[in-house]
Picture 1 (cartoon, one colour):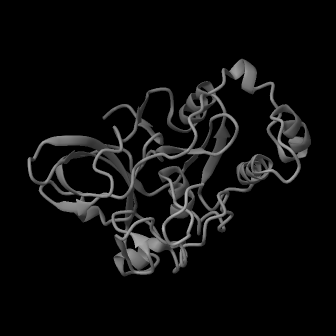
Picture 2 (tube, rainbow, N blue to C red; picture 1 turned 30 degrees about the vertical axis):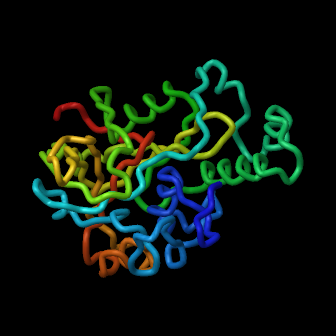
Length: 272
């Protein structure tokens, strides 16, 4: 894990997923990050308790012509690949089989790899929060099966195009709301740490999904194409959640949006 200049662990976009939802999953933080009231940004662009500017924003900010800060969209996790389902399905994936997993991946006792596996398995096996449907998937086939079990077989997958524009002011270009996303429970899949690629996929009600062109504010040239999700009901979120520190509000008072970061995915019905 990287470190910032002030000694605090750096946060990759994949790790930010746990931060974004940490109050909803009872702060079982698989990366050992600080809870939302103490976590800090990794550069000098901090406000309100150290929450990185642009990490959260209001739905109204996704408007053509608006200039807004873009958080660090880069994925700093090790490069890994999905295993074919015929292989991943044969590997143990439960805390009860942790000792066997450690042998397979040669993780010595008290090693970082062993701890990461234990934390990830615990998170995957934990109960979902209210109205959440979740599954950890270890193959692309498993991900498709989960998405279609929630949305039906006519689905489309989206992701932010790249990390371009990270940690800069960006200009919002054409914005498109994905029709039906607020009623069909889109499936968001976030890469998490494990010896091979595992995605934490889950779905919540009361969300809206948007696509937006991301432009350079000076040249007006398109530099990225972003996907964002807005949580319209934050009534069950912790008052200490970083979004409320950043945006100056509280649970149930506002909607909260965030970008889908590099190497993370969101599945929706394909009618749009």
